[in-house]
Length: 256
Image (cartoon, rainbow, N blue to C red; front, side, top):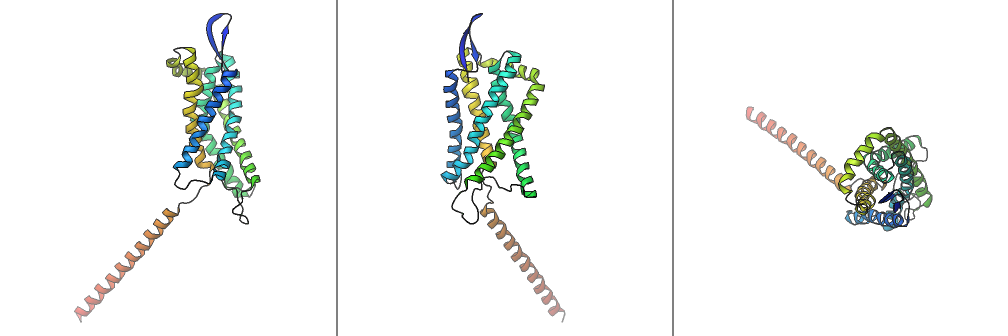
């Protein structure tokens, strides 16, 4: 969260991470970022029921709030070392998208396969039903998946934090290079750092992560196409064999 305050030593307004304006901006950012998942649902060939969609996306929503708290902590910590917390707030987002999303996928799929292989809390992401009651979602299955998702976010985030700390000097320079064009004035910088850039990054991350958090269905169309192709291949082979037999019979008859 950001606040513009006057410093006693400088007449220029200073970008800080806490304030009423920051709360409003963060609420707007969260709403706009999450709305991309609504658009994504309408673009699906077979849209998920709203209840299932809500259970899928709520994991990301609560996870994003958790990540936001961590981002503020890291921005204050690393920003305090370089006297630029706002820049580190943006750098946190950039690192989360570039590396955190990949780590989220790898950690999540690894945990899911490990649990399935060793029958430890066996689950499939996006599946909230059991065989006995296929029409009634089970809330405890959502709880399991949400807890695993938070564990994944924690492992990925602290991996990114470690990398950011070790490379903080280089990242500080990168941040200056990226943000120099938007430092026309402090208000424009605030909007770019807190709304425009995070919105684009968040929307992309939500869209990608929803693809592996939802239930993975094997497309029946592809299975039908494969079966049809196999059937056509078998018919073709049988036809070729019959043709060879007929040619052989005609050859024998002509010799006789």
